[in-house]
Image 1 (tube, rainbow, N blue to C red):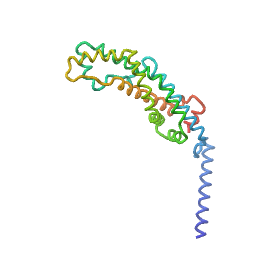
Image 2: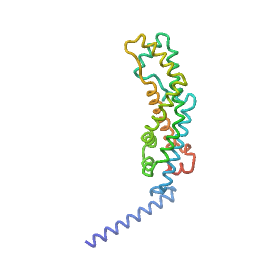
Image 3: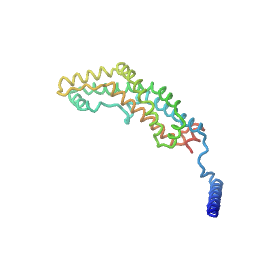
Image 4: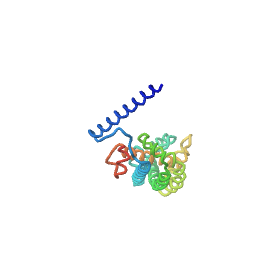
Length: 237
């Protein structure tokens, strides 16, 4: 039995030595090592927070600008599904301009609301734990975005709703909506009366998370997007 233990120990030492020699040789030839990254937990957490702050800032800035939603085909807010038939009818009777006005002002409301998203995201980022950071770093291309969606959706919805309401009034969306569908309801058997504010709020949130996911993917995939030494170090590993 002692002999067996001795042989097992000797084999382990030999294999470990060979692995280290191989790793040292690889490092000399290529400058790389098989060892795991020696990033500290603080560097990982700070790097992820910096990446998220960058993605959030750039994403919300882009969407809160004029036409941030309206001229982006991927997130442009169109008529709700249950109003599509009504839209076709309105256009067919010469009320297409009213429909266009309603669509434009819904997007303007989303752009206006996007300005209030950044502080909520940043608060969630500040509360990110080391475990969260590791999970995000090892996750897929949109792991950070999923983390933010989980942590911020209730707060964003609560913050967006009054802003959307106010924006819809300010941009005239409510007026255009009411004008368009009051006309439609006069000739339609099935009346249209969806909650415009809730619909625009939902679409605005979807658009923001979509944009942040694009920003995250760029940082993960494109070295040029890593604009600091910390980002380069964390995501290169």
